[in-house]
Image (cartoon, rainbow, N blue to C red):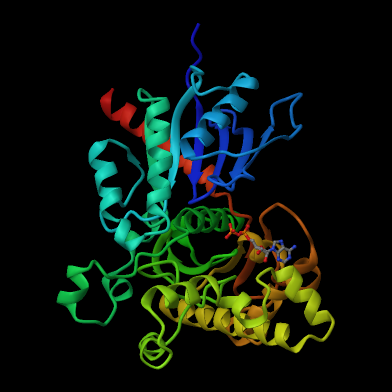
Length: 410
Ligand code: ADP
């Protein structure tokens, strides 16, 4: 008897990394997780953790892995050792994280040649991400050409943004010619977290307005009205908005011409400056919030100022999205910093009592992997921590797409 395929392999291909998870969508069980790092270098490393009963021991393979093709074959080998290889009849599909779907992709999409071509056409607006995502897709397609491969786009959740939020106030002809508009990123996380937040409040997503603060190494805020995104802080690229680990977030665009004209810097140098040498790392030399907090505890002024700039920006976005939404049911923190850094959460809503926002010190200091409220009972607006799970969301969307199309064909 052939088992009904209910497993989804989620692949997240970065420029030099490949993250993956294998999930069973019927039982909701995560079967394996892993990561290949430093692809293309001598010191590549594959870390694979089977999570099935009796498993759980992480295995490491160290040594050069030349490219994504070799990386995925190595991953397939590790999965096969656990009896869950890519040729398993239980594998229903592979779900791929694709960063930029432009205006074209508003939903998860089964990948064919036309879809590949469109993702490729979007490379100029996502030069760092889309080529790596495409490599992962092509490799997976070559290994399992018969299996549905689904692209889940970071931008898709944000395609509901109304034009006034999505348009920049620059010459329309120029903007349209170069497809310049706000696309937004981290969409899978914003979708998952806003839905979970509604669940935490005991309401349907359609009934609630939430501000989601995804604070990882990259960071973005979104305003979600009734389950649909109406504004988000990242723009044409993931550089705009909040202060991030290494990215500046918002700056006056004239800073760029100034650096070109007066600082004699090239466009590429400024790109590196704003994307890799700015944000927390540019302000104080560290991008890890744990290290910044440790330095603050030792009265380090530079770290203090970096933290204060980070919080100031965050607060501005909470205020802005409060105004965009008009009524807010919850402000939700997620990702590495948002889930773990209680001082960030406390500082971000401090002084916003007039907006109905407050954090309960005791609840805020609880460490947990579960979605939870951290606002006092009297607060008009809930403040919550909801751990994000982009892989689960990609798997869920991938699986749902197969079932929707299957039921349409019935
Ligand atoms: P990304 O997926 O964008 O790389 P994550 O969501 O994993 O990032 O977040 C990584 C960041 O989370 C780290 O740079 C670190 O600053 C922060 N972080 C992780 N754990 C903690 C913690 N316990 N306290 C404060 N910050 C933390």
